[in-house]
Image (cartoon, rainbow, N blue to C red; front, side):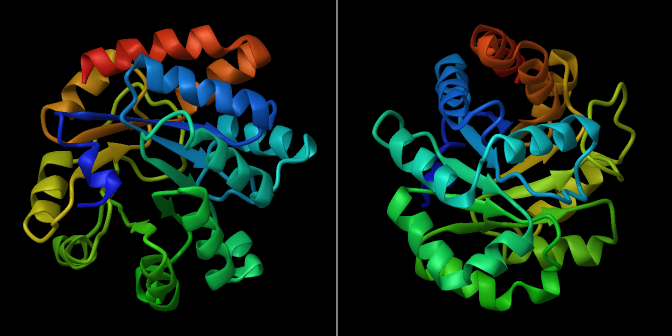
Length: 255
C-alpha cells in the first residue's frame, strides 16, 4: 500500500490544494503545515505554469503571482524535501505535462523520489499517452493519479482499472472554481469507477462549502478542495495561515 492509499485508511479523506510559491515558497510551506494541523489527510501542490488550461480565474491568478515571485520546479522539490522533515502526510504535485517533459521524465521522477513526493496529477496528459511517463513514475515510487470526467462508463472503467494512488473524479465539466451546485451524476460515475478501481476514489472541482463536502463524503472516499483555499491566500496573502487552518478544519469536520 502506498503512502497515498494509507491516507484513506482512517476514514474519509480531506485533500487540500495550494499553488506552490503563492505568495512565496516559505509561505506555501507554512500554509501546508497549517492544513495538516487542521486535519488535511493529503495535500496537492500546484506547480505554477503559464497556461494552466484546467484552472479557473482564482488559480490562474495564483499561478501568475507564483511565477512572478520566482517559483520553479526545483524550488518546489526543495519545499517537499523540507516538509518531509516535518510531516509524513502524502504530498502530490499537480502540474501540466510541459514542465515535466522539459525537465525529462527520468530526471524529474528521480528528484521527486529523493524529495519524498508521493504522487503526481497531470490534467492535460491523455490516458492513451501515459505509457512512458507512467513507467518512469512507477520506477521511482511516485503514483500517477488519473482523472475521470463525466464520460462513458466504459472509459471510466478503463481508466480506473489502472489507477494508482487514488482516482480523481472531476465533479463538473469545465475548469476549477467554486460552484454553488454540482449537478453531475456522481453516484453513477463513482460506481463505474469502483467496479474496476483498486484505489480510493476522491471528488474535486467546485467543492467549497461544508454542506457540499458532507454530501460528497457520503458517496466518495475523499473530498478535494482547491480554489476556496487559494482564494483565502489571495485575500490574506502572507497572513492567510490562520484562515486556511480554520477553513480546512471546518471542511475536514464536515467530511
